[in-house]
Length: 88
Image 1: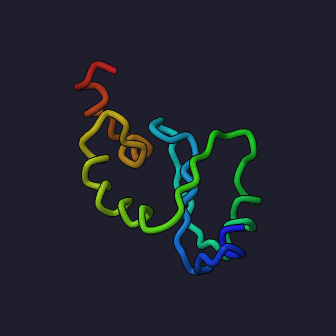
Image 2: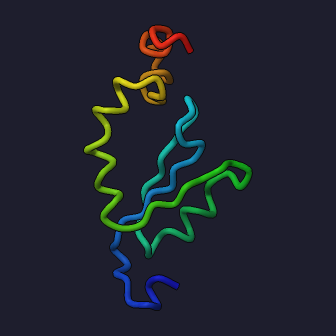
């Protein structure tokens, strides 16, 4: 529907599943590929869909995520020091 309304098929899309949890995952796509990518994601997970230039904020926020209690990438790698320091 967005492309039919004139949005560019190359516009970025990001599917963020289980946001703000240690299980958070992010799956990139474009408007042109979003439907097929969405079909591969588990239907039972809460998922945010970010469309447009806001997706570029992902890189800007990456350093912030590394120093907060909700840091899925570090926790997945076994680093729970910030979570422990926060008393969570």
